[in-house]
Amino acid sequence: MSLFTSTATWVTDEHRMFAEMAGRFMDDELVPNTEKWAENGVVDRGFWLQAGQTGLMAGSIAEEYGGVGGGMGFDAVTLYEQTARGDAGWGYGIQSIVIHYITTYGSEDQKQKWLPKLASGEMIGALAMTEPGTGSDVQAVKTTAERNGNSYRFNGSKIFITNGQSADLVIVAAKTDKSLGAKGVSLIAIETDGTEGFRRGRNLKKLGMKGNDTAELFFEDVKVPMTNLLGPEEGQGFYQLMKQLPWERLTIGIMALGAIDFALSETVKYVQERKAFGQRVMDFQNTRFKLAECKTKAEVLRSFVNDCIGKLEAGELDAATASMVKYWGSEVQNEVMHECLQLFGGYGFMMEYPIARLYADARVQMIYGGTNEVMKELIARSLDV
Image (tube, rainbow, N blue to C red; front, side, top):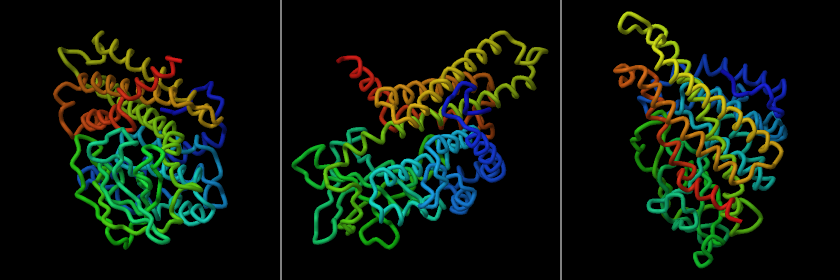
């Protein structure tokens, strides 16, 4: 299994060596703990620190901030190597997104303060956009951040926040001017440790991705220094979100590819061993045709994902294409999980088999990061010019 295609122009020897290192680390430290994290509803803090020591979260961070100094392709490698081992619990995808908000919009002081700790795993990041009743409509956020001397005073709540129970640094979308609609949205970082008025709700019980802690966050007169504003001025939040969403949506496509590769590998092994009516399940024409269809879909997605990573590295990944890779990748992922689980028969319905977990994990991929219906609308707008 590999993220790379043979024709991907963005891939270097460094990427291949990084993938080998990341794969070994995942085999040794992630795979043995996946079930435990799912039962506990959270990834151990120690794993984040181990990943930081290995350099898995530092690939795209500049060297002066504790990183490797590579491009975002290194983040893509880490994410693929994780999901290609059947895990969707470790919230690295969000960690990477937070890192790139700070890298792109943070002040020099903010970069010096937060990036080294995000790279090392000392800090876990979260992105708080979604609110009860707003869904994908970022313009409709009701959380406010009012000026109060040299601070902002936060009030409001967020829901479905990945890494919500663990996060030390939360980038919050809030209205700094309620009269301006989208132009009144700003992104402001909140350090959670010891912050008065900040409260986490319960760890939400989900259909899938059970190893990832997902929570509601509450802000009651939370005071945050004005120096925590991302960007040089207020009102840039909606623009900043729109510029960073292509990477967020591409991460969903990468996760889909990794999960598909793992599911196919597990399913092929199972049908080669399992017998029915005196022959291997693999020997039935239906089995072979279904697997052939799934494998072809995987390779088409792999080519598309690699093309998008290349465009991202070149600064050319537009919103419509990112919407396509998110929509297509998550749809294909769910189709493949459906077919693979069916080939397991009754055992596919048992949680002791990874395919059951993969099936449940896949469903949310069509919802978060903007629902696939929203993705189709964004794609359609690019045609209606």
